[in-house]
Each structure stands twice: as structure tokens, then as C-alpha cells.
Length: 338
Image 1 (cartoon, rainbow, N blue to C red):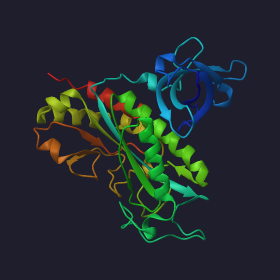
Image 2 (cartoon, helix red, strand yellow):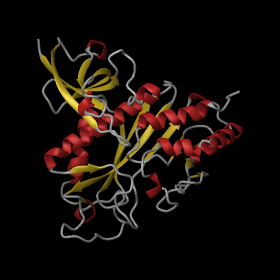
Image 3 (cartoon, rainbow, N blue to C red):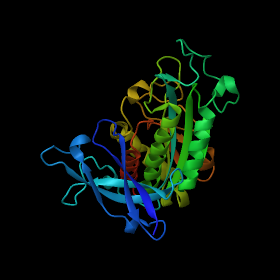
Image 4 (cartoon, one colour):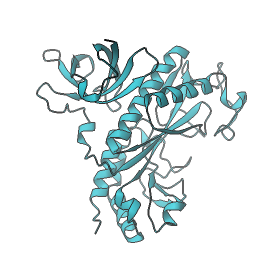
């Protein structure tokens, strides 16, 4: 019977941004295990800011499993953190989502590849490269550098092998900045896959001596920050829609503007300045094809009797997709559909 390497992955208790943690358990199975075959496991919560040393046991509850082709008989196991009594740990944001299989999410994860504290492609002796302009979806050594594309392509292949539903990758506006997009039917499914894709990326970069910078504004000055735009739709938005419902939905988003910002990642005031394709953090707006609005309305949505999906451009690259999806669904739930 083959032995499988099960990498249990969870979010720790650090704030405002949790870290990814992982440890490997070896188990025998006849074939690649299913989720219901995986046992709960424990860890020392006093080492992850999730428990006191005098009572440090926390429980890892598997919630999703993916093949890991970087290891022989490997698996990546996304877990929720639970208390010993079976209740969700206070740090467990996943447990707070009112999940809806008909709620579809597409997250656009931006990030910087960083070497020795500077984005890849920045002069190693200090200073700056050419101003942004040619880097977005760019090609060539001048725009991409020597190892960046190797990393992002390898990351894409590992994720696809794992069954992560990538929808694309591209170079972003700033030098050393990249993006991948993940789509999932069901908010938990989409958010699980973002966290696993992040884990694969940071683990992969260990071999290249490169780190990932998820901060939303790592470069001051005239450089784009990093977001994690949330594209979302519900069954009602896709199948019924209508301008009246859309207007009521936007009114609910405007009313809950502060609650959304609080859930969309730390330091967003550095990114949401009204410049660099953002709306100001203290304002709410929507616009058709407007990348400077809080909510971008695709032409396809407006031209289809206000049906389809919408893009919330305010979530940032450090944001927790569990919290982002939860906040969006709470606001959508405030608007009657009949």
C-alpha cells in the first residue's frame, strides 16, 4: 500500500495578515485519498499565535485536497483551524462564510517577485528601472527579466496539475509585478484555491531565492499597487438582474462601504488614493468599464439587461478571500430579489 505525503496547510493567528503554515503527515492509502478519508490533525497553537502555551492544542480539519505533483504521492490539504471542542477557532474566517454554491467568484491575485528586498528587475545597486508603461503584459528581457517568467510558468503548471482553476496569468503594470486569476463556483471553493495557489507560489520561490511581496503598496511614488479584484455573481445576477435590482445593490454597497474596506485587506489607504486605477478609499462609485471606480461594470453586463458579473476593485493583494467573499455575500443578501 503506497504512502502518501499529506501537506496540511492552514492560516495562523497573526494579524492583520495571517501567514500560511504547513506540515506533512504520512498515511497509507490504496490510491489518492478522498477528503472524507483524511483524519483531523493537531498542532501547537502557542507557536502560531492561536493558543496559550498552557493549553496549546489546536485542531486541523481538512476541507479540500489537491494533488501535489512536486512530490511523489503528494497532496496539498487545505484545513480549517478548530478548537478542541469542535468549534471554529476565532481566527477561522472560512467558517464565517454563508456559502452559496450559486455564488461564483473570480479573484485576480497581484503580487511582486522580490529578491534581496527589491522587485525583480530593479537595479541591484539602487535606483529605479524605466517608469511603468511597457511592463503590463510585456515581453522581452528588458520588461520581464531573467527568471520571472520561469517562476510564473512553473507556478501555473503546478497549480493546473493540482486542479486549481486558473483562468490566466500576466505581467502587471509595475516592474516585477505579476497576476494570476482563479475562478470558483462557490465562495469557499474559490477562496480555498487562492490560498493553495499562494502556498504553492511562496514554496516554489524558495528554490529561486525569491520572496513574494503581497503588500498592496510596496513601492512609493508613481507605481501601481497590488490588488485582488473580486469578480462575483449570484444566480439572480446572472439570470434575472435588471437595472432596478442593480441600483438597489449598488446602494447597499455604498451604505456598507466602511465594512467592505475593513474586510478588504490592511493598508488599503496607501493603494486606494484615487490614482493608479483606483477610487479613493473614502468614496464609493461604479461605472461601466471604469477601472477608477469602486465597482467596475463590464459592458457585457450593462448590454445584457444588467445581468452577469460585477468586479469589486477595492480588495487588495493581502486580503483574505474568505473575509472578502463573506462581506460581499452579506451585502448582496440585504437586497431583496423580488
